Amino acid sequence: DEDDVKAPKEVTTWEWVRLNDQPAIWTRSASDVSDEEYKAFYKAISKDYMDPFAWTHFRGEGEVEFRSILYIPGKPPYNMFDNYYNTNSQLKLFVRKVLIRDDFEDLMPRYLNFIKGVVDSDDLPLSVSRETLQQHKAVKVIGKKLVRKTLDLLRKMADAEKRKSEKKDEDTDEEEEDEEEEESNEPSYSEFFQNFGKNIKLGVVEDSANKNRLAKLIRFYSTKGDDLVSLESYMERMPEWQKDIYFLAGDDLETLKHSPFLERANHKGVEVLLMDDPIDEYVVQNLPEFEGAKLKSLAKEGVKFGDETEEDKKREVFYKKEFKGLCDWLKELFTGKIEKVVVSKRVTDTPSVIVTGQFGHSANMERIMKSQAFGDNSRMQMMMSQKTMEINVRHPIIAELKKLMDEDKDNEEAKDIAWLLYDTAMINSGFDFGNPKDFSQRMFRLMQSGLKLESLDLLDEVEVPEEEEEEDAEAENLDSDAEEKEL
Image (cartoon, rainbow, N blue to C red):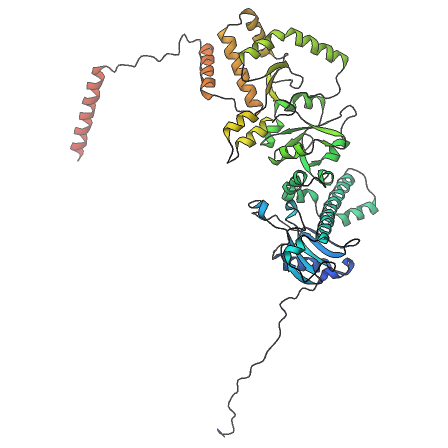
């Protein structure tokens, strides 16, 4: 029986496993591809574990024919701006379904380097080097169309969000409610801008060809509500007499909301855009106007709201004549610090502010330039703007200072008050107020006047009586004796 049992044999079998299980879905019609397939394909080409935020699938026709799928990631990469100028586009270039390169840099500009996807064209040569392919005319044509398709996708998202917000303010019937439910699944443009808004702003600075399209996509906070607003929606809410778009730039949103530059604008009910991103300063430099309306900073001179009456103009002339002596005295006192002193039309509660010229750097821009790691302080002095001090003639501090100046122009107390007025105006306006030692000395003299002290000289040192020292020594001896007895 033992001889009848067969010995076991080792048999090897082979099975084929397909590693590339993602078909070329860009060759299919967009209507034939499901959302699940789009999401699975995105995760396969991007190695991302999150679903894409939005995507577009299209076919380019005309001078060059190609097919493409472009994806917006769900979240921005943590190091998106660490090596911004050396980061290539994340689009995969195919020629007749043959992968040419994973990151072909000439297809997308730098500010859209977060876009992922594939591009496949039959019009590109397959048997040439990559350097030759980069100079091919068809590549440039494809790149322009990809940028426009990306901006169209963002524009559709923004329009859908605008329609959705408008419907919330209106009474809708059942049919409109059904449509709203269908649009509720669309991605939110505000959420996209929170993640990639800096890229869109960089596009305004870098891409002059698409500047107008990008200008409609940028968003800012404003004094009217807590939501981001577009330049188009801002202009729709402008009163008829308002001709310009007003903005205020700074480093903190809460500080901007309480800035003295907003006092007159808030009093008139004028909406002001609040720019708390450092790149916003560069955006407004490259975007001086939008659809015929100029962008004007409330922190610069020459601000006019456009609703002044003849009575306001007469009152302004009277104030200028009445306070000319004080303005000249302050200008002479602040020689080298400010260029001129004028009567303000932008503040209502603050005694004074400091503004810069229309074509000079604002206080926020000076702060940004000083913060540069490789900045040159010697060049900074040459690039600083000429400052203008604006005084609120209706403020009691200014009225009392005028009285002191009229009585005695050499009054030291009046000069100290004037310098403190300058220091506080510099701080309120976002500037560095200068020498802290001089500021502290003026504050000490003000405290001296308030406390009615004759002098700020130090008092004589107190001499400790010898009897007290002997009593302290005896007390210490008694304590030590008591501790020894206890032991």
